[in-house]
Length: 213
Image (cartoon, rainbow, N blue to C red; front, side, top):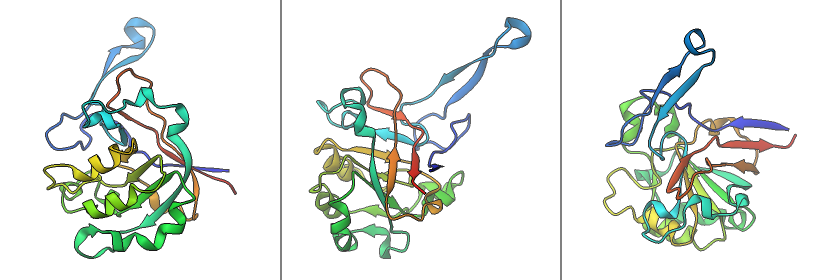
């Protein structure tokens, strides 16, 4: 069995969605003075590689803690959309994967944008689903969808319609994935366990791919 880490490291000064604050991680105690080391961590719930719950945007949407634990684990597949024309991922780019979509729990969209992590380019022009594409995808019985970009919507979206299309189906959305180039298998087990916090609109996750060899 091989396990591939699909998560960015959470650290002070890391990239965050524009308008939010980066995490602050600082020592609260020290071994020299207190006999033990403990850090204080202050961060938003959508920091780094993270999960969006329906409650992130829907007034009465489900929070992560209201889902059964198996919501965050299942069979997954990656589709490579890094060469999509015009930066829009439309239904026509997805229909050939219809047989695959009937056999998985999670669809991972590989845009190639994780290569820009830590630069200004990460926040500009990543390939993103159209509303039509998202609504077509939402017709499949998936648990969630992930992307290696900052958002499942385009950065110039004002209404976050792609988020809403998936949240209406009680899907979770996993954003800021990385290391997708290390996965060559057609399908694998995907795990994205969140922190167990109450009323969780979102949570950082240590997302991994588990590949049987």
